[in-house]
Length: 523
Length: 71
Image 1 (cartoon, rainbow over the protein chains, first blue to last red):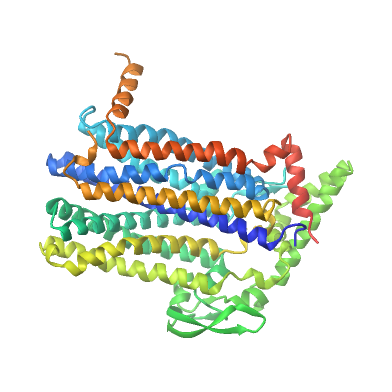
Image 2 (cartoon, rainbow over the protein chains, first blue to last red; image 1 turned 90 degrees about the horizontal axis):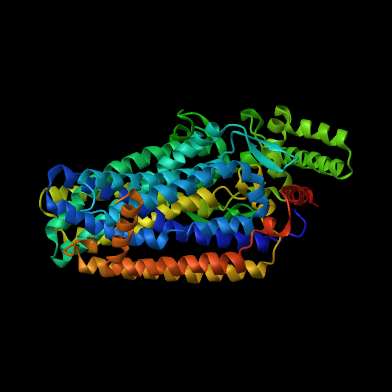
């Protein structure tokens, strides 16, 4: 346990970060997906010359603009929090995050701010082709700026391409390409962006359904539904594949998260996948109330082994294997990892003391030892475990992880059928008669947001207690400041973000009610 | 007209002819940026290491101290 750091400080700092990240993520996925949908619609306008497509493009561009404007810079607050609330962490990773975040800043500022201006101000001022290029570049730029922050997040889930330098107390990048092309980062980027496309497609279908229910803007609404249901269907299918790749990454690099979101307590060969389940109040371990037993579950045999290792009979470690170790399958126990982590911290402490005492020879020798590949692989790899006082805290909330994963997956499956029905009814010319479906489409909008947020909850809660997998727990990352200060800013953010959200909904609702006749107010 | 004038004119015309929703979101953006950079950043979110230490050496020593200060 770190001196002077209370669990209350860690919990409030985490809650503050979660609140800002979740609010930020309300705005981002719609920007990522709607940008592409608008670009497709404008491409149809340029290809066909049909002014109806221009009107449609302009209307959705208005909603894109409102969402973009309200959401812009909400992510900067997260960077403020890194510097104030997570100073140990931000120093520790500074060298790794510097490059991706700088690229993100440059891309976001120059690419988006230049082309978004042409997108909104450039109608009738630049050629059709140039305007279309600007629209595509805005959409691609938004997705590319998401790439860099997701690369940073992917690194936190699976640190690669770096070495720890005790002199600077920093992880130093040894390979930019290894960080950029880490499978964890690549799959995270693809899964996050494709699922954002799904959310935006559902948004367009839901809003269009409202018009059809109201009996207005029918042609506009039907055309919008055709484009977004095809786009949404392709995106959700791709999301399933990228989700599968992400799950495999987790099984390999974050086995505890994998076991938690599947509620797998005891590992086995040919492990089954719990398709649906509900936890009871009873615990499987009287010493750990986090390990809730299933009250009911539907399990499909062998699927989990295949999902994790592409082998129907592979061994998948459970929570108990990861805590107690499993010699037969080469799973290290938590005690062993903690011991190795403590050794790494002790060595670092010895280095610090030698440096302080001015003993250059000893400090240099210790630095060489710490930076040696052998020490990095055998001890520093488990550095974060040295801060773990109770090995039960290595298990994330099983129920929270399980439910968020299953909510995301079940909703994802529902979206496949949703897009198919939307496309079928529209192409058959029956959509205006399917009032029940149209109402469901409107209510599917919040479900898309729930699925998107559930994905992030799983990614972040599921990897607790780590802020950087195996290297740094949240307790070692947090700044020693007063809990009261964090509480004040938590509520401040809650008020600011809620106000922004209300502003967005109000401005957007007004534009939706005005409809597409005004060409979205853009000249 | 040179490229700078044309660019200025482009943005000037764009902002001059903003629709109602455009004006509203710009107002929201400006208020938001003011709250973030003038109020939050200065009064609530000073960069802990930048404000409390003068150079990178002191900052790394502080983090090293924190990381090894376990009981």
